[in-house]
Length: 111
Ligand code: FES
Image (tube, rainbow, N blue to C red; front, side, top):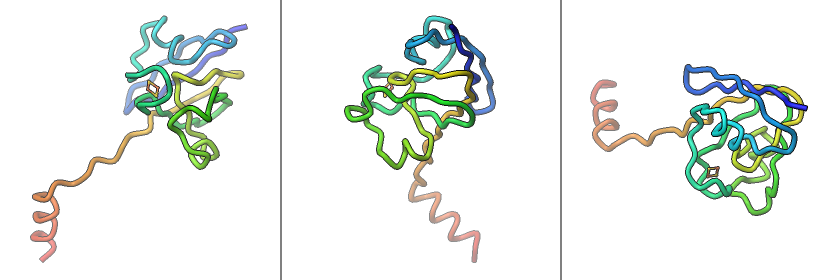
C-alpha cells in the first residue's frame, strides 16, 4: 500500500507517494521531488524535516546525526525514515548567523 506525503519547502508545496518500507528520500528522488540532500546515510542533516502531521519512522536512529530531543520534537532525516500512513512535513531551516557588520548596524540603528 502506498502512502502520501505533503512536503512544505520554504513556500513551496509538493505531494508524492511513498511505498511501504521505502525510504522517503528515495521516493522523492524517484518522483523528482526537490528535496535537499547530500550524504543519504544520516550524517549531513541536509534532509532534516519537522513532522507536522502523521508518523515518520526514523530507521537506525542510533547511527544518524539526530538527537533524542529532536526525535521527541518530531524531527526526522528523510534519507533514513519511512512513512506510516499519510503525513505532512516541513523543512527545518537553519538560522543564519549574523555577520559582524550586521550586528554593528543593528547597534547603530538602535541609538
Ligand atoms: S541526506 Fe544527509 S542526513 Fe539525509
